[in-house]
Image (cartoon, rainbow, N blue to C red):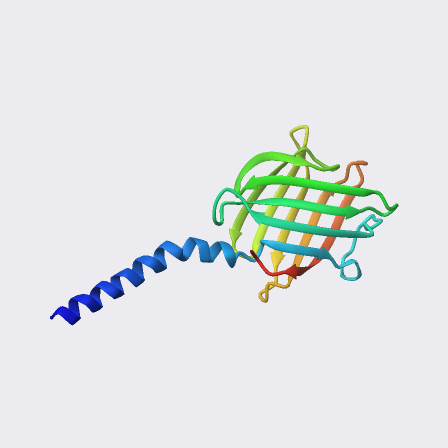
Length: 167
């Protein structure tokens, strides 16, 4: 009887430990999180021109699966360095966006492999981005529509390749 009680306690402890660690494991396995590099050859920019390069780093923000902190280091088509940053929850509310095209961003995360963003300038929607991570977690494809800071209509397909595993 004592062995049965001890075995039950061990199983109970294992179940509790698994449930307690599940949010941590999900955060580590979040396919959005990581370092991504622009694949210019696979991307299209209409009307263009495309940036020369871009590296994006996404980190968990606000708790496991609740939001992201992002830093984009871009070299534009004429060689000017541009850094874009934001920290936002996945709740559809507006958060500060530090970049040339907008001043706020609202995010929704309908499933682990999809992220939708709405960029606004002075309270008006200027861009919508639909991002999808490939099933193997190695490619991020973003469809961006709206207008750029010059007021031109854009229709971009931005492909990024993972450069570091999720953290």
